Image (cartoon, rainbow, N blue to C red; front, top):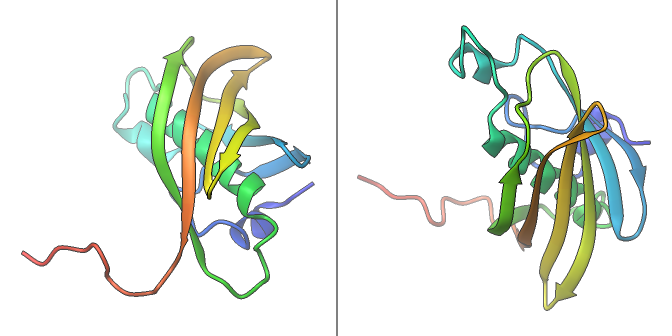
Length: 153
């Protein structure tokens, strides 16, 4: 339904941290997206070379990026540069290891929206088996292009 190029028009993320390859289905309050995990993923060179496991934090970040696509797709093409913000993680659970090669599916549902803050429920699957789930709290801001928040040391 959405290609990687179309995803890049919505999200500011780029390789190697863009963790959604394709959107399979999208509705007003739900998205189903995927990431192909290959043995060549840069993170697997160190996590762990002898027994590669796709990091759980990457799975959660992938769920957040899928949510970002769901929430920001209407803004895409408006000329506004919007940065999605990860504001919180609740009830995160990791059920199984994610080992390459595999197809990781992200299923994210919007459960609450209030004053620009969004709560989503995300579940990640490999071969129809739940590998992780979490409630995510998300927001966004207009990108100023500056170094606001950066520290000079």
